Length: 100
Length: 186
Image (cartoon, rainbow over the protein chains, first blue to last red):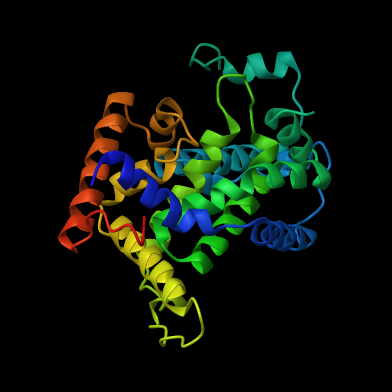
């Protein structure tokens, strides 16, 4: 069998050659029906769909830890009363026995 | 006519009509690719549906910088899903059930046609997965060697080598089964 004959034989009988436009149209309709169940999206909604799982596992873990620490710091700081510059300087100046 | 990148950008903003056009354009080859790799049309339908749903979901994140082709991404998704599917136990295909002899005129011809299709499907299935993927992409000239290399993440010479080995493997498989140059099938 020459390579040309082999190619001709495969071309004629390979499974992909049996696909007709009806099958493609049916598949397209099925996908479009399934899209109806997908949430609508505006130009910005994909920002909310940030998928941690799509990242590499180690990177996802780092992002998760970073987020948790950030939230903890934000919560811890939010209850503290606002301080002026003078108060902050006094608080930072070490007291000495002479000063006392 | 919009190119793939424009259609994908519109799909990313929720335009279903643009997505339908994109799908019409590429579903045929995606189906052929999955069918060649899996050898089962029902599985191939499922895979291609899933691939296009993933395209829809990921479309907002698509960054078309002019260098990456949409089809490269699509074919890679299809082949990855095929790889996952092949790890599952296979279902019995309708084509695997022997057809009874048809006494009607041309019945023998139909049986011969079915046997030839089965033979080619078996020959494809006998190839190592990488060779089968390259053949499914490139054999009929739908995808160039360079894009196939990008889809598979290998070099162009590696694609050429896999393609040559796949063709030799197919020829060997067919010759082993006594298939030479029988004119009734060719």
